[in-house]
Image 1: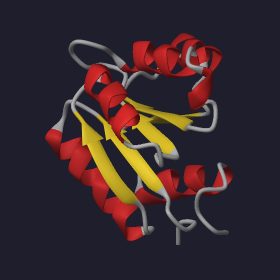
Image 2 (image 1 turned 30 degrees about the vertical axis):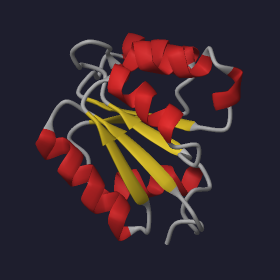
Image 3 (image 1 turned 180 degrees about the vertical axis):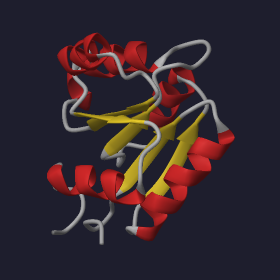
Length: 128
């Protein structure tokens, strides 16, 4: 069960991946918003001041997930937002780069429901 008022933003250009993440997050009690790339994700953030976590793919058109993480972290008013990369990028250099840019967690695709829920629990967004 997520904490009260938990709102997640899923940013992925794959409709199937957004649906999978939406199912997992909805089942844990999250309100969901979606975006198909980082630029749209930034727009969603400005429209919804209650978003507590963004689950972000790395490889997307227009603005990729790494660029999104850097943009979010460059705005101090977003410091309360958790950022979780959910991507097929498995090279350790990519993990290090994303974490250095300000990502809080990194999940490699494919993943199980439990992996996502465990990461949300680690961030304090889902009750233990």
